[in-house]
Amino acid sequence: MIAPHIAFPWGSFIGRVVVPTLLTIVLFISAFFFVIIPIIKDSGMERKKEMIRELTNSAWNILAKLHNDERLGLLTREQAQFQAIEQIRNLHYGHEMKEYFWINDMSPRMIIHPNRLDLIQKDLSDYADPDGKRVFLEIIRLVSEEGSGYVRYKWQAHEDPSVMVPKVSYVKGFAPWGWVIGTGIYVDDIYAEMNLLVEHIVAVSLVIVMLNAFIFLHIIRGTYLTHKEQRAAALELRKAKSSLALSEKMASLGRLSAMAAHEINNPLSGILSYARLSARYLEKDTVSRQDLNGVVENLRIIAGEAKRCGDIVKNLLLFAKQSLLSVQHVHMNEIIALSVRVIDHTAKMRGIRLKAEPGAGDDLVQCDPGAMQQILVALIINAIESSEEGGVVFVRAVYDREDSVCVEVEDNGCGIDEKDIPYIYDPFFSTKQEGSSLGLGLSAVYGIVQHHSGDIRVQSKKGSGTKFSITLPRVYREKGENGTGKQGV
Image 1 (cartoon, rainbow, N blue to C red):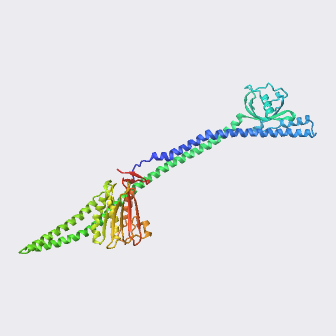
Image 2 (cartoon, helix red, strand yellow):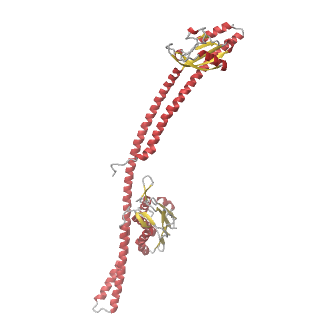
Image 3 (cartoon, helix red, strand yellow):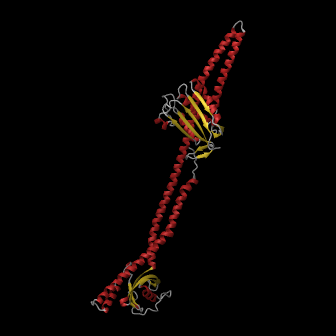
């Protein structure tokens, strides 16, 4: 039955999924607006400046070519300069072919300007932009000092000559004629192009963020459903383990009951025999002293056998009354002693010596004593069943570590085939003859050990005996669903 409500681990989920995802999105957005966009704008501005520089150099080459014709005598200076003016006047580029080149001399005096015919042949020494910057004097100074370079100023807009907007131009001097040629681009146009590009990038980024958000929500939903299914499966598995442990406990109890019935049958037969014999003595007409002594001796034997039956039943009840998951502080040596007492007579009946070797030191452990006794009884029974007459089964404990204890069950019986060892803890797997065992014993043992966050190891070789070593933490830590332990009470 699946629980109607399963708490979702929001704390761990937020730490493992939500926070990293949101942090990634925030970092992406921050990097986009504070790093990528400024880089795009800066690089866009640099590309435009590089473009006008190359265009100016191309126009300057026209002057250089015509000057070379002048030097070769193919043209007079007037002819060369006239052709240069005509060619430069007709050079346009950019959006709607509105961008142009101009030429002024070092006076400064305007030689050619396609858009400002009113400045042609005018002295530009006093010309200043709205910020008071004497543009052409700044151009003359730059060319005089460096030969070429960039200059920023304000100039009339294409659409409205009355509007002055920022502009950046590249100018280069042509020394043979004392000219300066230049071209520029409006800063607002550059930013408009960059903003359009940024808008496209923002749109793409928003799509990416929306996709990430969709994926994020899908992950949350999938994780929640998976967690719900895992918890439901874990609950079912826990119930199955509890049922399996109870079945194994009942099976162990049934096997013990069968052994106890067999063991009790022998002393009961003796009791019956000695009781009948005593009755015969007492039914005589004359009872002699010798007969009375015989009756007394028979009664002593009957008492001893009855006491043996009582001990068998008592040990069986001590084992049967232990409840699963009753975690408490117990002395492991007492659990070992009780487990050995339960099985001891069966071992003797089979001619096998059961030897307990309680460890020295601190044997106090926090565990389920019934489950621990179930483990030891199951392992001892398996050891007895795999041993021949005259064999020895050792049950020993080691308490030399502060955080854990070790219990070992060792026999010198037939051992386990190496190929079977990986499967001995599987439910219903058994190396015994078909029909003699359900194969639940070691599976239940393994489950109990794991439930106590312990470890079980086996050393065995065919024909050379078997040793099971169980290591348990001194403090009970039930193994949780995620494989980690949780503190017991």
